[in-house]
Length: 71
Image (cartoon, rainbow, N blue to C red; front, side):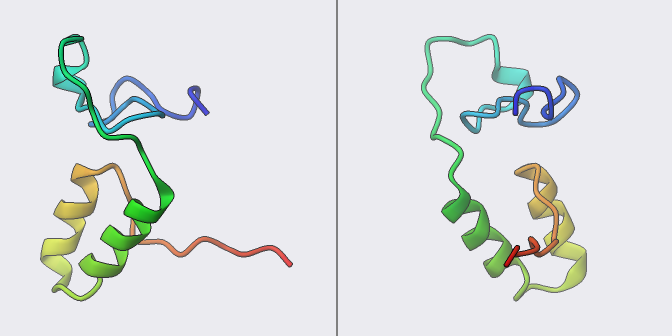
């Protein structure tokens, strides 16, 4: 998983939601990355107009794509 997240991303940590520009500040704690939170954000953003949702998703390092369920 850690190889997927590159250092050029806005939130490069695969465990938490720390921003890249604050990655060196070890005095702070950051909320963990959770699939449920990401899904909730994507669902909410889809109710907005298209020009707004790309900016909001890119802040969290997300994309407006449905995951494929395997049967």
